[in-house]
Structures are given as structure tokens and as C-alpha cells.
Image (cartoon, rainbow, N blue to C red):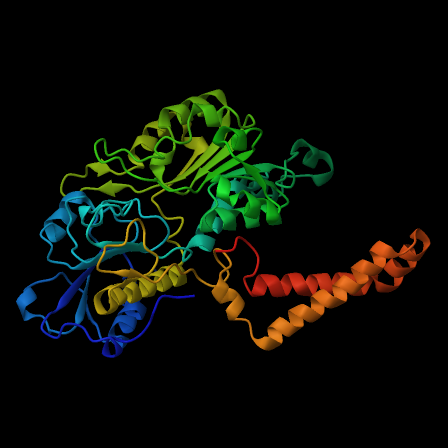
Amino acid sequence: MTANTNTQAENPIDPQRGYTVLICDLIGLRFGPDGKPDSSEVRAHVEAKGGRFHPSALGDKAGLERGRVHFFYQPDLSTQEELIEVAGDGRYDAVIAAATFLPAETVFPLAGVRIGAGTGNMGSRSWGGGSGEGGTAALMNTPGINSRATAQMVMKAILKVLPDLPVDRLHERVARGAFDTGRELRDFPTEKLEGKTIAIIGYGNIGREVAKLARAFGMRVVIHARPRHRDWIEAEGFSFAADLADAADGADVLSVHVGLGKQDAQSGRYANAGLVGADVLSRMNKGAVLVNYDRGELVDIAALGDALDAGQVRHAAIDADLFSDVSTGRLSGPMLPYLDLVERHGDKLELLPHAAADTDHPSRVAGAKQAVDQIFDVICRQSVTNAKGTVPPRYFSLGATTPSGVGPVTGSDLLNLTPQECSEFADLCDRQARLWKALSSARPDERSKIAAEQGEGLVQLINRLCFGVEKSNLRGPYH
């Protein structure tokens, strides 16, 4: 499912006004002929909808073509000071961002869209900060767009250390002919992922994609989430843990996917800051792996340092924003505290600059296009898709959307099935049911005969049904 893609001509806006939208992150990750990241796909999408794309900052607003939505592309903005300077006076009606943090002082009267899941970096007071509560503008995201890319990077981080075979070392020796398999291979025993336990914190789109990949590797999956998710978690064959520390108990890997949560208005602290602390890390198996490809603030840095010191955690993979002031070189962002661990534990750390979800060009382009659609819907129809927090009174909600195959099963997934597909599912189920009933009611001596004669056909029916269910996005929680 995607956001509404009606053209501007089909949804007329105020002809006496030019609307302005700031894009402050890359909307294309492949390099074009000019050697710069290519934004042409999103530009074409904007123009096909009747909008205008400007590869520059907003100048004289009075000179803009009226009756149009104008997008101003400034992907090099990064520091709070820069963003406040260009967007602190409300000159932009809306904003599209990905990893860039929007400080509270930035003003966007109509809306903001975050490309990707979560909105912890969308700190503008226009919509009440990252929670989207209490403001007058609409806050949205594009959930599921980069869920698979992030989940695959999580597995890559795990596979760097589990199985723990020293591949580089062995390659170097083999390449120079300095290894004897018969005599020396026994000196390199290794663990495997199969049978290991991974604790996943959060049952959102990314957490669920990680769970599916981990199961494919033969891992035991334990998920900590809100109690309302328990039935669906267990229906998918995963284990549910109501308590965070219980989820971590005996885990070989812990992967965090819950977001920052609500921000306290007085302290500015997020509800989930420091969520992974000493009580959680101590419950994991000694030598466990921590992956935080969510938000840097979710981990208690001091507790992680102690766990690395003690060998309780053998490896920590962290993906968080790191910003550098152009004029002073001063560093900022949630990655900054982790840098204090590098001197003591550099060989046990893998630090990424919030890149895990941003490595996939098609996902970023798809997310940017959806964000453009959502901005058009807000301006042209006063409608909000994938709202975070409260929806301002002047808008109405169109609900949530995710890419096909990602996220919960919806009524639309069922309604999108053709009559022929429904008939095929019914036939598969009926044929299976007859064989299952035959096996359940037969005498012991007859069961062997049925299994010998009908077993192959039954398993083929099962496989065909499972494939059809996955293809049609009919597996998972129902929303």
C-alpha cells in the first residue's frame, strides 16, 4: 500500500498562495553523472504531481509561482544552528527529513514527514516534538519503507561475530599457502547461529523483520513488546516476554527496535532513554552481542562500558547520528557518548553514523516519494497518512500504510485478493483438510498407508499454501 498519489491538478489548492516544503536529507543515494547523489527520481515525482522542485534554498517567497507546492532541496543541513537559521521563522510550510534532527526552535506551520520509522529526530515544536503530541501541525512518517534494509544490516552486524570463525585470518593464511586442513582446522572450532537465542525489543515493522530473518537462521526468537501483541507474537511462533529483563535472560544477541518514546516536556528526556541498562545486559549470556540500530539514547553508555570491561558483552554494534559543526568541528549527536568507549574497546565496537537504514537507494527513493505524496495530501486535502501522535483538528486521518509484505495484515490485503486467488486458497485448504481428517481418523495400520500414498501430496499442498500466504502478505498480526 502507498500513500495517495493523486496529482495536484485533481486536488486544487489555494491559487493565491505558493506553498513551501524543505527537504533536508538526501532523497537519492546513488551517484549521478555529476558525481553527486542523484535526486532525479524524486524530482520527477514532484513535477508529475504538479509541484516545483528547487535544488536550492528558498529565496524571495513573494516571487514564487502561486497555486503550486514548491520543494526546496537542502540535504547538506545538519547542525541545530543551521536548521534554526533556515527554518526558525516559519518560512517553510512543511519539511521532509530522514536522519537530520529538527530542533524545537524550527517552525513548520503545516506538517513534517520523517522518511522511515520512528520520529524521534522530528523535534520541532510545531507538532509537539518527536511524539507528535500537543502541536498544531501534523507529524507523519513512512513506516516499513526501510524495515527490510535495516533488518538485513542487523543480521550483517550479528554475522560479523557469530559464527565466530576468523575468516580474514584464515583467508590470509590460505592465500599464501600457509594452512593444512588436516592438521590445523581443528584449532578453529566455531559457534553457529542455529540454536542461539536472540532477544528482540519491540514488535514493530523492523523488529518483526529481524525476527523473521533470525528464525531463518535457526535462532530462537524472544520478543518483548506490549501485552496486546502477545497473541500475535506467539501465533507467529515466537516467544513472548512481558518483562524486558526476562527477554534478555539467556540471550546470545539483543537487538533494540522500540524508538525513543515520548519526550518529557520539562526535562526533555525520552521515555526509553537508557532502556538497555545494567539490569538487562547482566541477564544475557556472557559474551553476548548487542545491536542497537534504533536510537543511540536507548542504551545506558556507562552500563555498556562495564559490560564490555567484564566480557559480558563481546561486541556492540551501534547506529546513531553524529554531527560535526562546519565552522568549529565540534561534534554532537547521540553517537558522541559512545566515542568515549573507543579507546578501551575499539575492537569490540562497530559504530555507524545512522547509516543502517540509509544504505538502500530504492528504499530511500520510495520513502521520499511517499513523503511527497503525504505532503500533497496535507496541503490539498487536509488529510494525514501515517500520523504520529495527535492529528490536528483541521485534518482527518487516512490511517496507516506500509509497503506490500511489510507490517501487519490489513483488511485491504484480504480485499486485494482476486476471486480466483480466494478460490485457490479455499481449494488448497479443502484438499489439506480431507487428508488431515483421514490421518486423524484412521486406524494405526491405515495411517502408515495414507502417509506412504498421500504424504508427498499433503506436503506439497502445505508448501503451496505457505508460499501463497507469504506472497499475499497474509502472515503476521492483523490490524
